[in-house]
Length: 138
Image (cartoon, rainbow, N blue to C red; front, side, top):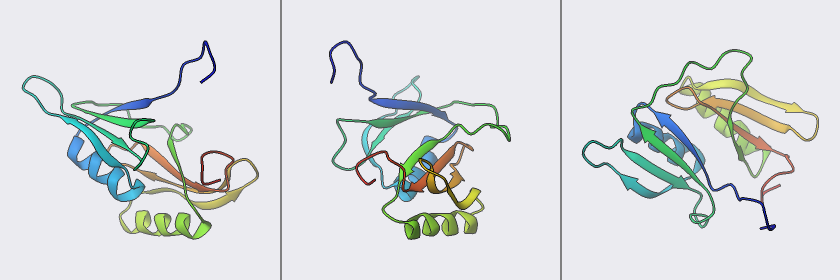
C-alpha cells in the first residue's frame, strides 16, 4: 500500500433478510461467510468474502435495512469477474430462470467487455463480466 493512502476493505449493504441475501451471494458469487453476528438488540450481520481473500475484502450484509428502489438510469452495482463468456451466459440463463435478470448478456467496447446484470434479493444490481481489465482473472 502506498504511504498516505487507505485500502478498500469492505462494502456494507443494508438488507431486509440477511440469510436470504447471504445465500444469494454464496450461490451466485461463490462468497463464503467469514463473520456473523446476531445478538439481542443488534442487527444481524454477515461478512462474505472470496475464498482465500477473507482478510482482503468483504461484503458486509446488515439486517433491517431498507433502501429506495433503484431507478432505470441508476447503474450502481457490485461487479464480479468471470473466467469466460460462457460463465457470464450461464449466470444470465440462471438469473432469467429465477426472474432476476436485469441486463441480458451483451458485449460492450473496452474496458467494459461482456457482461450481464442481475438483482439480488433486495434489488441491488450485481454485474458478472468477462474481459474487463480488473481483478486477477482478467
